Amino acid sequence: MQVEKSAVAEALRRQGDYDRAQQAECTLPRHVDTERDANLLQRLDVDLCELKTAQRRLDQHEPA
Image 1 (cartoon, rainbow, N blue to C red):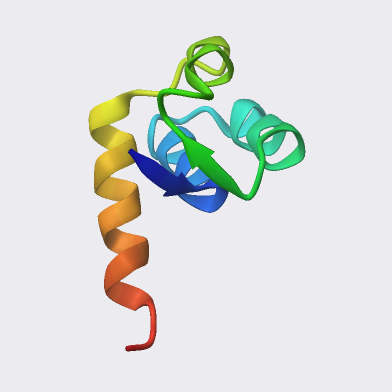
Image 2 (cartoon, rainbow, N blue to C red):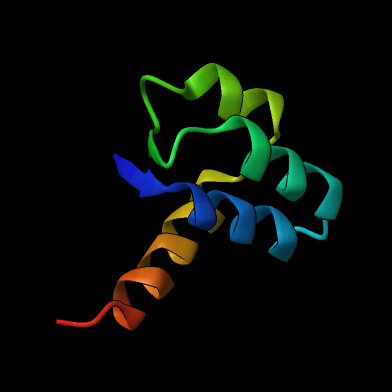
């Protein structure tokens, strides 16, 4: 699954982990592939269900 780096940061913030959200903003590529970047996401302790929700929110706010 492809997600935006900002979706990862939002998911971490929603988990209450602001430090890891900041770390994600600094270390992840702009476009994150959940398979390719699985190790990074695991180190950041990203909840994949929350990540999917965060990406859907971002997708809804993009201009058509």
